[in-house]
Amino acid sequence: DAKTTQPPSMDCAEGRAANLPCNHSTISGNEYVYWYRQIHSQGPQYIIHGLKNNETNEMASLIITEDRKSSTLILPHATLRDTAVYYCIVRGPMNTGFQKLVFGTGTRLLVSP
Amino acid sequence: EPEVTQTPSHQVTQMGQEVILRCVPISNHLYFYWYRQILGQKVEFLVSFYNNEISEKSEIFDDQFSVERPDGSNFTLKIRSTKLEDSAMYFCASRILAGGVTGELFFGEGSRLTVL
Image 1: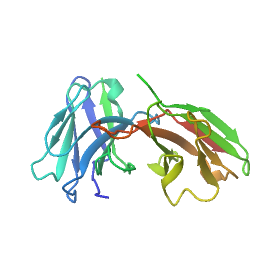
Image 2: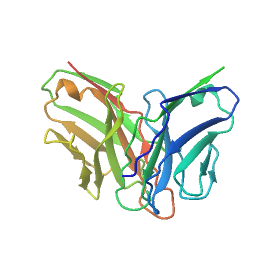
Image 3: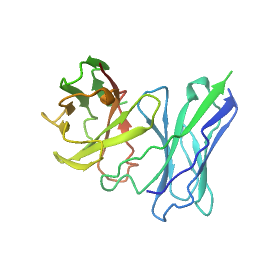
Image 4: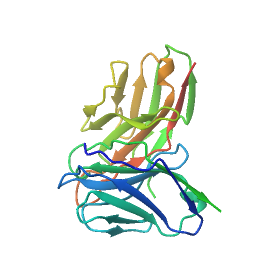
């Protein structure tokens, strides 16, 4: 598995954009970057994923550098409910095989009023 | 929105007792997983299950663990003789097969197991 490196914690003011970085310098050509989050010991929740192009959905945007060695998850207008641990995971395509997710320690994002 | 449901939400048991944790995956999903998270630690993979058999298991998933899909809707994790170190939150997850979708895992809210 390609490994990822994330800062252990970050702070963000409510209403501001939260930019969560992830380094994955050993990512392979067919590996995707997935982001999940875990709110206070609840089950992890899928946020977004991408291969090489930037992606956006109703929850977040994912910016992947051209060399694919790093990425940034952007929560455009963070709310208190976005306080969670965010996991950046690199894995092969999830729609093939039995690909499990391997969770690291993630980034603990604290959104404050 | 469809969701993965788990029961019980919290179970307290004595060391050495058998425990069964139950999960109802999303109805059209075909891959099933169990993960666990010891308090303050990472979410750890235990086992994946497809087509009524284990497809992969971790070194944590030893002989005291077993999984079953007894009736086409439930997916259970059994711990035969619980140990203190089995105290953790256990998460069930499921995902749809392939077909152009993201294939993301949907997790339940977890079952907290406390072994005394």
